[in-house]
Length: 524
Image 1 (cartoon, rainbow, N blue to C red):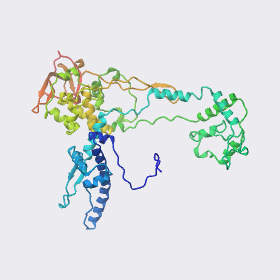
Image 2: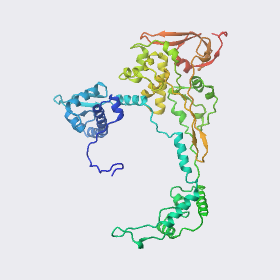
Image 3: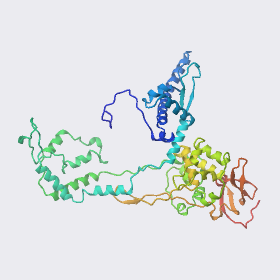
Image 4: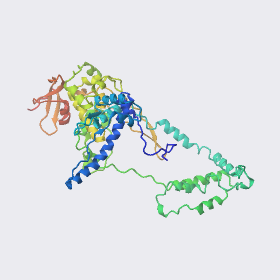
């Protein structure tokens, strides 16, 4: 019998599942959510069948036989069959209507039989990428589940673990009293207790551990490191019977408590703490194919002096760890000040900004997202259209880099990056304390939230000097231009003393800021 079930279920029966995420992306329609879950199950089944059928067709072609095994992922099913699939919860009319809604949402595709025109039964294809995109977007918008223990939980655990040691004498005396005073009663054939079935009041048959049996009980879960586990004699039935026949000593409670503590200390002294293994040297190689910035560029984007002053731990890894690269992440994006953002115009539909956002979050969800508020700060997502094209590009590169690094969906990181750029930044949480294995307390590290003005210290003002990373003479920022493209997109461009005009992303990735000296003339 499976764990968690009281009834043994018969084999081969259908099971109908309703997922919360499918109910959400289908706007609360239970029939669509049931259909979407059933289509996913059929899609997974067809994937397994495709591998088998490809092997059959390959063997058939090698033997000059017709390769007619089905390798497609389309599911042939009528509305009547879908009623049976969903255990009769919905009628055929509702099934046809809801299947059409799933097609309109681009979650499912439909067609007629392409080879047999007389076959009127429709075929259905589960669009995995579109559904995955909608699921990732829902995951990014919902509040994060509270899965980790809080400081209050840790304090409650410490108080509970400290209670047995508060009055050891009283606990030991109570246990010994139970051993002496309460005999075990065994019912006889008529359901009554007989006097002859009373056991010895001094035998240890109550399941309460004594100072003799307690150390071996610890050894069942912890093996001393300095001994060979195979060399330790097993606990046999003769040893258990010998312990049960030994009477409980009639010593005072103080002596029994001291013996118990001595036995525990002796066992725990043989247990050693293992150090965590060193960091893998492949960590620096994992980000080699990403859009990466140097340490100086990353620190300049953060702009926090206390972050730059921290001493980073040394990581073993030879030359790979000697010059690490820091991949651009969504958390490193600097929000546009709300005052500056409010002064910008909203990009119209079809502009460069609108097209860039639609490419990141999906064309089917853009209008819905623009009508919502951010989870943090409650800002309108229509402010996404107030961002500049260079800022949209920066969000896209950061989301793509972090998706490759963590293995998640780019859509999720893109939505978080756009929210962050319009000011949806969570406040810094207070530092918490945790307990080490030896009982000492240490402070958990909280990553600081960077709140930096991009225009501080004149880095992006006229007169700032930059040096190309590939080498060459310094150039001076002469003018900041707001360029309007043909698609009505407005972006910031920087004109330098050598005549070149570049954007924000190219400026950060190809140049180093060396200072601001308006009066100095630069050699051309």
